[in-house]
Structure formats: C-alpha cells, structure tokens
Length: 507
Image (cartoon, rainbow, N blue to C red; front, side, top):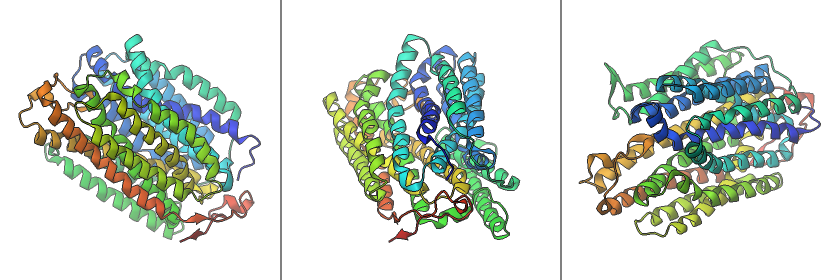
C-alpha cells in the first residue's frame, strides 16, 4: 500500500469530480425537450446527445484504467477533469445539435479518464481490511447523485435554460482540480508496456458492440446503411472482442504486458463482482424508464415532480452507505450485497403492482424507500468484495474492467427496456394513436387519451418486471462470494508487485 498520511481528504477531493460525472449522466434527460426546442432539432438527433456521451464514456474505460497504472491515477484524473470541464463549457455554448453532440463526445472521453482512477486510488491508499468505509462513501456518492441530477436539472432548465446543466460543471470542475492537486498524493507508477494491438481491438470491439446495442432500436434492429445491419455490427463487435481476449491470453503466455490481465479473473470474487455489477448497471438503467413514462404520461407529473418521488431512495441510500461501509470491514460483504440486491428486486416487483391509473401517488414513496435501503447495501459491499484482492500494480486495470462491465450492463438495460416497452405497448394498446408510442428519451409526442391509461399502465407494469428478474441473478452471484481472510503483507514492497499478498477464499 502507498504511504498516505491522510487518505480521507484525498478520497473526498476525488469524490467531488466523481459526483459531477454521475450528475451529468442523469441531468441531461430532463433537458432533452428544451434542447430540441432551443436548437430546432428532432427527437432522433437529440437522442444522440446522450448516446454519443455513453459511447465515448464506455469504449475507452479499459484503456484509461490501464493508463492510470502507467502514468499515475492522479495525473490521468486531472487531465480527464480538465477535458470534462472544458467540454462542459463547450456543450453550454453550442449553437447547433451537431456541435453539442461533438462536445458530448469529448466530455465522455474526459469522464472515461476520470472514473477508473477514483476506485484505483481507493485500492491503492486504503488497506483491504479498512477499505469498506471508503467504498461506502463511493456508494453514498452514487446514491445522492441519483437524486440531485434530475432535480437540479429541472431547476436549472426551468430557471436559467438548458445550457446551465453544462455550465454548472465549470465551477465544480475548478474546485475539484484545486482539491485534487493539493490533497491527492502522487502514487507509484508501474512501467507497463503499451499494448497497441490490444488498445485497437478493445476500442473497435467495444464501439461496434455498444453502438449496435444502443442504437438498435433507432434502426428497428435492421439495416443501418447499405449492407451494414445492427445485428452485423453486434456480431462483429463480439468477434473482435473475442480476438482481443485471445490476443491478451497469447500476450500473457509470452510474458508480455496485456491491456487486460486475464489473471485478474482467476480471483473468484473479481469474476463474480463483475457479473453482479453488470446486473446492477442493467437494472438501474432499465427500471426508471417505464416508471418515469407512467408518472408523466398517465399521471401528468412534471420532470421535477417525478424526480421528487426518488427522494426516499437517495436520502436513505446516502445515509446507509457509510454505515454499511464500516461494517463490511468486519463482516463478510456477501450478506450485505445479497440482501441489497434482493431488496432492489422486491422494490421493483412492488412498483410493478402499483403501476395502475388510480394508485395514490404517495404510495410510490414506499418502494422508493426500499430502493434506498437496497442501494445502501449494494455499491460499497460489491465494490469492496470485487477489488479487495487486487494488488496495487493492477488496481487501475481492475477498476477499468469493473467500470466497463457496469457500462455494458447499462447499455444492455437501456436497449432491452426500450424494446420491451414498445412490444408491450403494441400488445396492450392496439388502437393507440401514432403519437402515443415512446419517442426515445424525449417521451411521447402527443397527449395520451384517458381511455388508454389502463393499457398503458399495464404495459409499463409488465416492463418493470424485466429489471426485477435481472437483479435476482446478481443476488445469486453475490451469495457465491468467498469470505476474505486476514490480510497479510499489505504495504510491504511485495504488495506492489504482480502477485496479491491478500486473500484466499473460503467456499
């Protein structure tokens, strides 16, 4: 472990930027209708404001995690923070949709440079048996951002205009830069060789896969252009990623330095943790879409009013996460993670039963509170159990894999829930007018007649069942986590090497 006299101030300074990134992924959806109006564009174009960011964010994560190991997580975090902050200013100043999309691509690249470094620094400056509270803070940050993003977005858009959802990042970015510069130590770097072929294969494979999944619905899962089809892109992406894995295996066997050290997956908890975080990414992306559509289309709530229904979730999550974080250093995190994942599934099943035209709105606060309990028990325990055995040398690579897996789950969840919503609406609203089908993130083109409310609510209720079942798979994986044993030798010179000095696993 690195010798850091004050690890907590270092972590808090990193969390400021991490919080900004998380807010930025939730704040934009609230502003989409105003962006369409202000830039005189259509729904298909404005969807790319989010899609371009997601692609630019997800594709480089493996690479940026590894670069953090090579050049130092502090250095890469600061570069990413500057890129993200300047791109946010560019977003706010954009005068047409093309410029805004280009700025969002650059913003996504900046976010990709920052995200793996936060978890890598936690792994480097906190010993494994005292890392739980730090991961708890990481989880609390995620929980609070879920609340602040939509509400802050509603206030800024209504009061100052859509540009301010981007301008607000500029002062936050400046403050975060000063804090990180002063409080985060320069950590030891490891002289990794640069796997150029691995970079090219992983970037190409991830782009084809993410683009195909994310945009499949836009092209009705058919032809994109000429001979290029959505399924052709997805299959090609999978083939390229398979070639990437094969190349990593060959490079590792020859004693080289692969971009993705496959040896990480020999640790059972690391493999299980990535399975769980993919299910979590899938679920937390998928379940809000049908519920928000229900709130706004059936019940007539504004975006800000819809976001206010998430207050119990965010407040309870933020309060529980640090408490749980302190406990997982002493109690097997498997039980906390499994409990949280089961609670999340239960909250979604509960929400599904409430999605009826005449349900009192206040009743949705109850499953929201249960979701808060779930979030408080998921993020810290899963992150801690997954990364606990990583040696400092591989902290960035492991963090990059973990965050990439979460983003892939999010893309899968977004695509799957959009397809399911459309299919259930077709089944439940056979007489729906043309304007009553979802138009991407912008919502619905026309006002839904009251006689269709019952069928629409049923379709949204059925759609919520998909993420409810998906997260149960994560709960099963959590029960298979091995129990960490006492840490030996963390902080010794050997601990910085290629072999972890930590933990063997019990059944």
